[in-house]
Image (cartoon, rainbow, N blue to C red; front, top):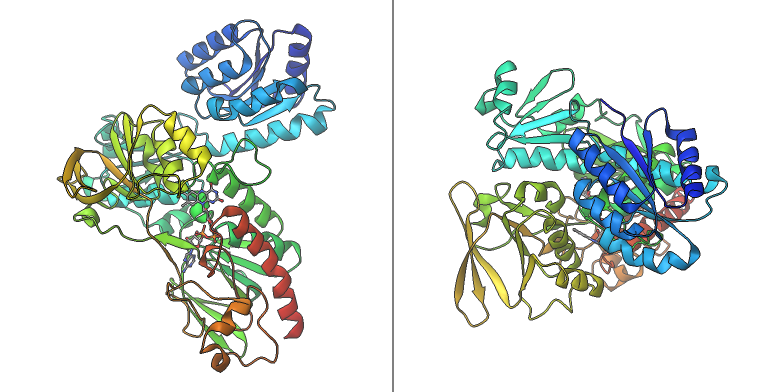
Length: 552
Ligand SMILES: Cc1cc2nc3c(=O)[nH]c(=O)nc-3n(C[C@H](O)[C@H](O)[C@H](O)COP(=O)(O)OP(=O)(O)OC[C@H]3O[C@@H](n4cnc5c(N)ncnc54)[C@H](O)[C@@H]3O)c2cc1C
């Protein structure tokens, strides 16, 4: 198989020669560096590569070229190579064009000319983009293959686990890929064994649990130490940030997650308001970076492992795990965020994982190519999901109870949605029921005049009704009426606080009603529900952990 391609495009022969030279000097061992002198030539090259089944990792194009301009070329390359990374070479005066191109061309980076020295200005950017591309890339002939039925909740659970844990795999729906019959026969895998996960060495896991997959992939599922300084429950943005700071400041830090690192943010197709990412960043990319950073600094991560309870033993925090074991720590951070509540529509529970998905738009969207999809909810998460699913589906309807999206969704997303021809917004409507036989086939909507309307759809993605994940906590951790964990000064407003709190000092900011137990991110009463604020709180908490450890 040919190495993946890095394509450089510029009409200025000197600049093109310089990009080619720099790229070759560093990447020629693992990539083929190709070049084109115009947008037209580049498109012809891309079509040829596609026809040969070659992979494209990055296209780096100059903006100002006669004929097809850089941003148009990059936008057109999306159709041929949606996963490739796109870089625009800009002069200072082109930066506005580059910013405009972020949405149209899914630009990953714009690079100012000249890029000297390449060790500082070019290679770090390209290294980073290649890391991200490699994480998503799976060569045609090897890697993990998951074979199953699209409408099976078990298949969905494994897909969601693999995608959430950033493990590249190829999904093969038995109904759509007749060639899977040969694969299944050869390994004597029957229909009852599905979903089945095929490994590169020919071995197969039949109808596995996520935990078995993690074990088979060589992940450690037991804690390395008897005692930690900080155990973080939940590896969303707040937990990951706490792990980075905790480990970097020398704390023995353990991070646990019941499902996958990244939390809610990990399921976002594009976070556009997180500082430092002008082109936006996908939740999986942000997670990949954060996990690498936390682990490099020495944090221990165990996934999937759920914390089911906690007790306090002479100041030590004893956490009970879903595998029956325990971990002990001097302090603990609750960073368990929120999850979607079950939607009350009639029949909906029957189809969870079989056409009804809570969150999970990134995992399942490709399965709904050319189909009709409903997205329920009016927040940013629903807006992002609709934009992502619309890349694949024939038609996406956003169903929202209010009269407009303006109060609940960011302006930039509303604008993007309005410009997307295959998205339709159904305001003042509610999902009433979901029907089908074995899979979602249609829904009923209640409109604000009290009438009902039936619609044929193939999938329903639900993005409403979040609830805090705090029911596993011990009673002494005070929560507000909705179940969010109270911290710091807010605690004194609770009538039972004075009875529970036995310390001479006030609780520190982000400390709960149990000394040395902290809370950060969406789980905390009064949280901002943003990636940046979750990261901020997770980072801050480590300072208070130090203070607690000094006092105790
Ligand atoms: C689709 C989507 C798009 C979004 N887009 C944006 C955006 O563009 N910009 C923005 O600022 N915000 C966005 N948000 C909001 C943002 O993602 C959240 O505010 C943020 O993720 C909260 O982080 P957190 O760490 O507090 O909790 P979470 O992200 O909810 O993570 C909590 C983690 O805890 C784990 N967990 C729960 N219970 C247990 C347990 N008992 N044991 C072990 N682990 C457990 C969960 O598996 C999860 O991984 C979006 C949210 C969604 C759902």
